[in-house]
Image (cartoon, rainbow, N blue to C red; front, side, top):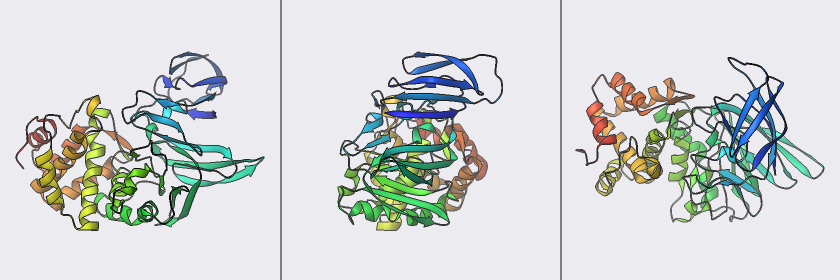
Length: 391
């Protein structure tokens, strides 16, 4: 059962999921308000008119479930053998707390998660300790950097947890206790700080208040999600005969591209996935000696150019047209402008748009400003064209 009291400042109707309902207390600026629930949406009627910033506090409870219509498998709250995991994209948050579940509405979070004694509850941000009483342990986490709701996570179960600091920030990694200790998953997560430093040299200062990652053992989770400051990884990625760090690089890159600089609409998702895929290519060049140019050449030949990266449509949000073609666009831009200008664009982007939301037109405008070159035709060909552009 999920039960909580969630203070939020909504920008519209709230989505509470079909499995949770207000249990009585609902206030707007500490005054009781009337509510009406229509399916997954909760409509709130304050007793008097409000304007400007206001706080809604909802006491709610329910048995959470997955979001059946989520595009990345079935996202949301998933019950596991030893606990639960919340993971999904573009929808997952509304499966376990009331929220305006859109990346435009970023917020900071404080989470308190009570679980049976002996289990670990992991979440986003900075660990704030735990207390045990009456057979239950309450774990507390603070995500102090504004976060899009789909990036919120909760992972409960039996885990090997490694805690420490990296560059004066907390780093918390965890691997399911059912995964053999000392294997690829443990070794890959142990390099989290090293990989983040590599990316920081190219993208600018690390934008989060903590580092980390969680590997779950549930074979139903066949993907990974860049949950803010603490990505969650499915187990299959660490059984492929390599060191698994390419995936850690991909999800850590999202801390800049997608988490700090968030998209204003899902049609702009290449700004998340294209950048993270290109970061993965750069890490592989550094880590394994695989030249980025060689990956570009082979990927270019294998790409289906009929799907536009800049607006792929709902069915293609998590397809190669976004990931690979987005990365191809970035490498082509690097070839066109040279390394100095290219990386200046990336670092300017992450600095000027930190903790904000963006669209593709914003990136094009910035690239033109920094490079002092017209680039509309370039981006039209690489992002929106339906035939292979000249490489």
